Length: 396
Image (cartoon, rainbow, N blue to C red; front, side, top):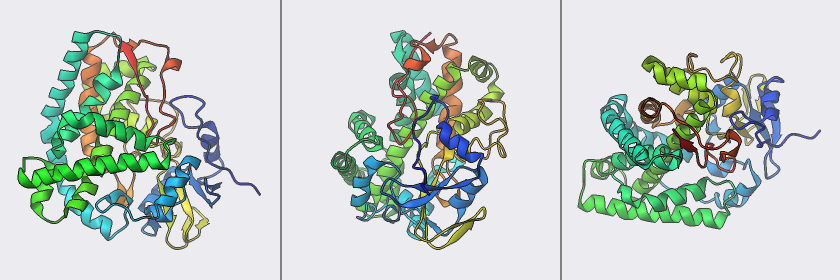
């Protein structure tokens, strides 16, 4: 019996591949062949996805996982080398627990609330520049990327003027077609830059998250570099793509845009609905069974890799009726876009704050905002591990 390999091509830019959505109607768990020939599982149901992500007998370590796409196979082979110390996203307990605990206090709801006036200032400054420049312009370059990038730089204590190199290297790392050599070189450059920055923090600490971790004394320089790497890349790439893709989604659904713009009480829930509907983590997450585990009546054997398809799970009609429709008034809480279980996104409150502030600011300041090209001409990030738009030409 032949087993499917993962369909990646989207028939419509905002919807997951039809073949994967169709699978969900046949059940929540499916046998799937990974890029290297490993026979594992694909999860398309919401309840099954939550069960896998919360289960203590699944590992997130790269040396246990099989690659989803062919061009990651060479990197996967190199991945047998240990995860960089401090890069806790790719660790299991107890190592993961130690780093996570150290950082949870830095990303509290209260601390994110304190950042809100600064986020609003940054959004307004971007909009001032956009208005002065006049359209058409690229919303990614002018708005979606600078806001989260500047916020994470200020939070961590990374000089914003250094962003060009690490943003370029982030793009290389997230591109699914990047060759292993180039990806490893990009990782090396970001790590070297951050290692040197941490030395500077030792000599001249400031009021920022990295200085606080340096002064805390619990992590050595190599661990601090791994932590900083994870927070820097995750902190600007994800929200930037949500702001770009979210604006695109609203512009092609004008009734939803009007609801977000005209009713301030809709914005908070609208952000949750955009997160659910767009689910920009469009490949993975992956987990490997540490022992035999039964989920929804299927036996996952020890050593088998499971791919959780979050975009399809987040549209499971049992959890979100009519989930293929964008509806900013829908109660959208409980989506899996930030993950679930011990690896749930550490920066989710920061991401929410950025979106809750940025979307209404953009829509109110530029009420005539519209695409400067046809929707079909907007280049989508189908080649990246985080989905979105490469560019979003707009005018007003």
